Length: 231
Image (tube, one colour):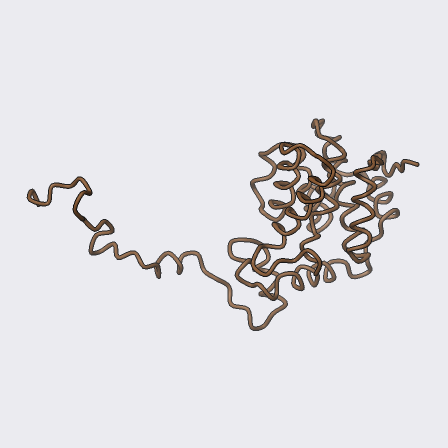
């Protein structure tokens, strides 16, 4: 039987049910309930903005968006967002999804912690981030009605200390691969939770690179097309 929460119908296709079962068996209650809320807040955003989106694909994106934080789907070197995107891609391919739909889901997951980009992409991409930003950061909080917020949280409760719990989950998924935090918000997470963490600095990397601009970045060699005799 289908379930409707805050006016949003939870997708009940074979694909959606399989995704629910997989995520429920893999993630703890914190991440599972968070992922369901992300779908609901994302879908509510889509309805409010009158966007044309695919509820099933949005559901897959929302449900898999934090799978990279689990041991089963965490790689040694990739950002956890990419790990989750890859897990969703593998899952969708098992069910014969087309590559265009897979790409939309992949991007929605991979970019969900990259502010300023997803909202300019397709709704199935943008709405994953919208749901995450509402549930984690409280962005656009007052654009949702009080009744909508109550119904979503009643169906999928937030822990009493959800704010710290979700930060701890982010830290747990990145603490063993700190280089993956470069240029993204997880640098803030490890700076808060790991006293040994040293944030990489974009400008310092530029200034410390191997390029020797003072002596000329281009080294002439035979066949490069420059007339050495004219210099």
